Image 1: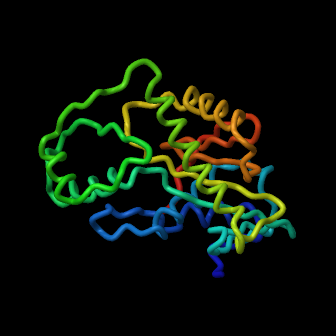
Image 2: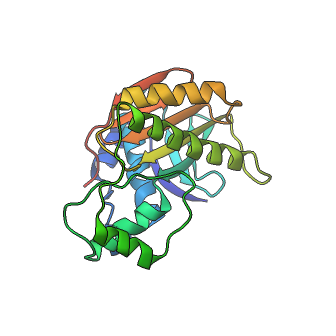
Length: 231
């Protein structure tokens, strides 16, 4: 386990996350999990209201879970994941390498879609077919189903042997699910229905980073604006 960040007081944390390097390179330029984790953790800590954080505060990088947030003797386990279909991430890499037009139709991602070869993805990128599109609130429902799927996967992981559980456990999702403009609040309401109807998950709070907003779900949904962070 290695120390990620430490702050003795709120002003020190604010100064740190305003200056920390959080640029995320393109997938074709060496983006790693470390880049997205640093980006997301900075935004999580920046967006949470002062009353949710206690000092001294220390964030450590672990494995199972991904992070441990220590505050005044309390420890919170945090599992992080980027929500994006594998084929869409690979297609983005190929587009950055020059395949396909600069302007293109947004792909309609499907949960559980089999992994495609690079050649098949290039053929689809070059064809740039419009596809079925979305109607009404179908994208908000698709998005909620995708978030629920990733939450369930992470929840299952936390219950496995060898995973460290803490007094409080969080999930942090970085939303990169492809589609048209999302009604974030409506989509979260659909996700809440899915979470309520399912077997209890293992997280005390679920956080979702969507653009410049952070949503926290812990029985109810709370939305926070994410301030500018990083150098």
